[in-house]
Image (cartoon, rainbow, N blue to C red):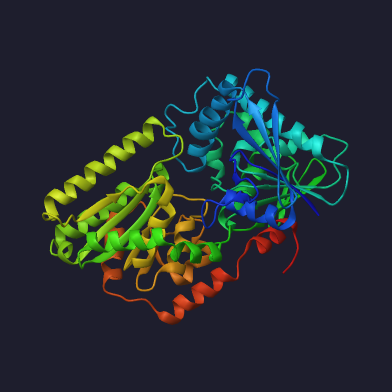
Length: 465
C-alpha cells in the first residue's frame, strides 16, 4: 500500500527526527503515526510567506520514507477558504451554530470560488503523485477539502482508492438544507465520488446518508453506504483512537509533575471538578459554569470542599464570537468567585496554560480529577473524554450524549444532556457522592488500549480485524 494523505492542518517536523505529534490523538497525530508506520506523502497548506517567485509547493523529505508537500497559496485565498467557508459556514453549520436569521447570506460566491481553488490545488498535487497503481490509498480529511474526491474522481489516471474522513459531526437534513443548493449538492456529490467515507459515530454517518437521500434524486441509500450515478460509496464508523503510549509518556514528564503540584496547591485540599476545552462555541463552557452556579446556590458549602478547575486554550484563529465567549466565561467565573469563593480559595478557576505545556496541564488535571465534565452541545468525537477515562483514578466522567465519543463509551460514563442546565447540575451533584467502579474503569482502559491507528486505518480501508 502507498499512502497519500491530505489535510488543511500542517504537521510539525524536526530535522533528522521526522513528524512530531502534538497530542495523544486527533487528526494530525493520527496521520503522523500512520505515515511513520507506512511511509508516504502528506499534502497540506502553508501560508504564502516565502520569497517572491518561490515554488508553489514546498517539498520536504523526511526520514522513514515520508514526504511533505506544503502548498503555498495566496493569503487572501487561504483566508476565504479557511475563515469564510471553513469556519463561518461549514464549521458553524455542522455544530448547529449558524445564525439562521442571517446566515448563510448572499455573499458566498467569491469565497466559494476560493474554496474551490484550494481544493483544486490539492487535487492537482495528489494527481501529480499518483502512479496509476491500484495499491495507492488517498486519504482526504475534514470539511476544508470536501471537493477533492470529485476532482480526483474525474481523472483517468486514478486506479487506487480514495477515502474521506469527516472529523466534525454531520448535521441532520433539515439543518444541512440551509446551505445554498449549489454548495449543498456539490458537497454531497463530491463526497460520493469517494470509495469510502468515515465518521466518528453511527449518528453522524446516518445523518450524512439522510442528507444524500433527501437532496440527491436517484441516490440509493442503505445502512452501509450509498450508490449514486453508478458509483458505490461505503460509509463506515471509525472513531479516532487514543494514543495510549503518548498519554503515558505525557503523564510521566517533569512538566506534568510541575502542573500536578501547582494544581494541588490551588486545590488547597479540596476535591477537583475538571474540564479541559479549547474555547470553542460548541464546547458549552457557559452552561457548565451555570450548572455549577445552580448547585452552589442550593448548597454554597460545596465550595469549601470542591474546586472547579477549567483548563482553557484559545482557538487557533479566533472569531468575534469566540472572543465574546471567552469574555463571557471570564465574567461567569469572576461572579462565581465573588459569590462563593474566599481569599486564596476561588470556587472556580480558568487555567490558561502556556503553549509549551498545554498537554501536560491537561494530563495533570485529568489525572487528579475527582469528577470530569465534558458537555459539548455537539462534538465530532471529543478526545478529552477518552483521556479522562484512561487517566482518571477516582472521578466519574460526565459526558454529553451529543459527543461522538458517547457511542463507544456510554457504559463507562454518566450521560449529560448539554442544553439542560438543571439536569447537568443534578448530574454533577449525584456524581459528587459516587465513587468510581475499579472494574469498570479497568474495562474502559482495556477498550481504549485496544484501539490504535492501525485499527482505524483498517476500518477506513474496509479490512476486518
